[in-house]
Image (cartoon, rainbow, N blue to C red; front, side, top):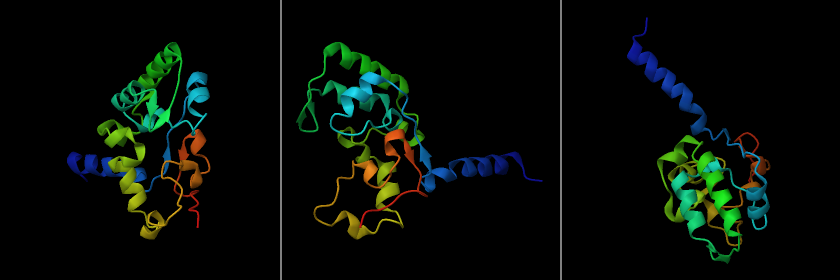
Length: 157
């Protein structure tokens, strides 16, 4: 019979296996102000993909948002900020690191999944005119609802 320590390690490994295969579902809780404001320019990223601190910094940097001028009513911005704080970091790796410039695509976990993928050749990221890595729906057709399952991903040619 296995001792408790070995059993604990086995259970931990089994619980983390889904992360290595990028079978990820990060729900996007329904919240109209967030959806209305953010989908003007891009899909509404699941709040669970960044830590509460990263979301706070992103909103603090308004109206300069990744080089775009974003104007949001102060009350609406506060409401969105509070909602993001409450729903942040639900994808475990996101709570452990604030990526450079608060970009999901610069996080270690995102880089490990996408840059080291057997499905995505290294040449994919080097081609000119390639879609931005932040356009999740280019490969993940269900990204808008927080589904990032490796089994349904379709890499553009």
